[in-house]
Image (cartoon, rainbow, N blue to C red):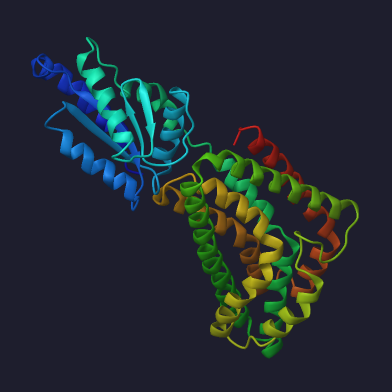
Amino acid sequence: MAFKISKLSILLLALVILSLISPLAYAQEEKIDVVYFYGDGCPHCGNLEEWLDEIKDEYPINPISYEVYSNPENRDLAIKMAKEYGESFRGVPMTFICDEVFIGFSESVTAGRMEAKLKECQQATCVISPLDAVKECEGDVQKEKLTFASVMTLAVADSINPCALAVLAMALIALLAKDPAKKKRVLLGGFAFISAVFLTYLIYGGIIIQFFKVLESYFVSLSFYVRALFALLAIALGIMNLKDFVKYKPGSFGTEMPVKLRPMAKRIIANITSPYGAFIIGIFVTLFLLPCTIGPYLVVGNILSGLAWVKSLPWLLLYNIIFVLPMVVVTLLVYFGMSRVTDVTAWKDKNVKWLHFIAGLVLLLLGIAMLFGFV
């Protein structure tokens, strides 16, 4: 992975170099750093930028901007900077001038207050820069509490869901029923089916992540509560799975495919006649898997939404690879004759309670870790 320097690090490095090579440039009139956070498409943010451009000849300002709608790191920085100033990040634009913060912008009210603050800063013998607060926060901005272990545990909990194995078993039975002697059909059909599940779930994941990004962009002050909500969701799913271990009931809410959907899923899967058909039907069958697999996926989607798209995609790919891995193993076992589909189904039925126990324990512990900020 290529080494990347953050926009903030570049900015601070540039300021250090400038301070070393041209100290006389600021001797006559010290620049006033105006740090503001904005969102693409925000009309008030556009008005602020126009106003700053208009006054740059009158006041020695140095505008520094951070976009928060599409950049989670900048959004985290905005929250931390607001806290440093005794405020909360309630929306954009949010502007920092010397020792004061301004929320929103209007030429009739906010502009006058900002201009008064600029005059005050201009007369001060020592200009306080909001960048001092940025430097204090810099170490925390790049923190990614998302860890390899958290994605792995959520993916494993999702992958051992009994209904995912049951759906694959139905697909393999349908392929074998057409011609039991042709094992190659099982291999190609099984992988076509798994590929459809993988790609469709990858798309679902992208939609989920984007949903949370938009949600957090418009309700920034609620981001902590949203995270706490999904920590509680993970705990609730863990408890429901542990309940199935203690007292198992087929089709339990949130942990297995509802019983009323199973006949319909079987009828659709029974129509598989070729690898191509397995792929097409696999796309539709994911809708039947959602009720029993969406819980952990929502939790990981909420975690990944805190990262930029480029950084979240590898984690999403890893999650879905782990999710379909048991399906790949089962398909290979059947193809190489090491096991029959009926054996796989029997094993799943015999160990279904333990599968729920493992998934439940993982989700419960991860939910608690999220709630207390360890993940």
